[in-house]
Structure formats: structure tokens, C-alpha cells
Image: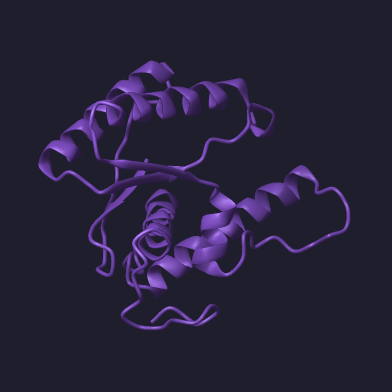
Length: 179
């Protein structure tokens, strides 16, 4: 799981947290996420917590993924429900990518159903698009190609501009090369 924490208008502190191994049940990940969120709130109570909205189970690749996302979102609701005054927002990943990158997907329009291979390639290209933008904005170093952290930075950026109404310190156009 990626996370990005900070004041709107600044560069967030971003990182990744392993919630559980693949062999562990979803409940183990939910418990670790609950502890992580609790500890973060105790250290520095946020004004808002923003996460990717869960995908409908019919859109998921497997039943295990459905169980994981429902457990993790349940943990978030449970822990955040204990704290008054913290706004909790869930936003569709495509909405965040459209804001952050100027496009919801890096996939070309094909006018037909995609093959499994095309779906994997499109997913990888979209992840690269988000990572490249996070590097371009200075949220990630060029050497850190972590899509979980890049996604968290994109969510943080969306919240900073949409919820906090922060204006960027510098304008970086879509399509500019990372420096």
C-alpha cells in the first residue's frame, strides 16, 4: 500500500507499507492497516483521508482481490469512525488519473474488445504514466519506480487541489518530460 502525507501545497512525505504477505488472509492486512492508520492519526491528526474507491466485485480479477479490498476498506471505516473531525473521501482511480495526468488511461482506443495481453500492456502503460507524472512533479525520485507510491501521490495531489483548493507552486504541463 502506498501513502502520501502532508500539507496541501507542499511535497508530500510518501512511502509504501507492506500490509501482509500473499500467504496471509485478508484479515491480517486489515489489522495491519488499522494499526498503521491509528498510529498515523495519533502522531498527526489529518484533516482528510483520501483513498481509491473500491471497485465493484464484478470488475475484479479474482475473488481474493474482492475479499482484500473489502477487508481493507472495512478497516479504514472502522478506525476512522473512531475519530471525530476527520473527513474521509473515496475517489475513483480514473478520476484521480484524469486530474493528475490529463488522461484516465494510457490505453489507446481500439474500437474492439482488448485481448488479455493488451489489457496487461494497457495497465502497465497507465501505471508508467502515473509514475512519470509523480517524478515530473518531484513527488518521487527518478530512481523510485513504485506504482503504489505514485498512486498515493496522485491521490494526495487530487485532494490538495480538489478538497484543499491549493494552487500549484509551479505549473508543469501534461506531456512535459521529467527533469
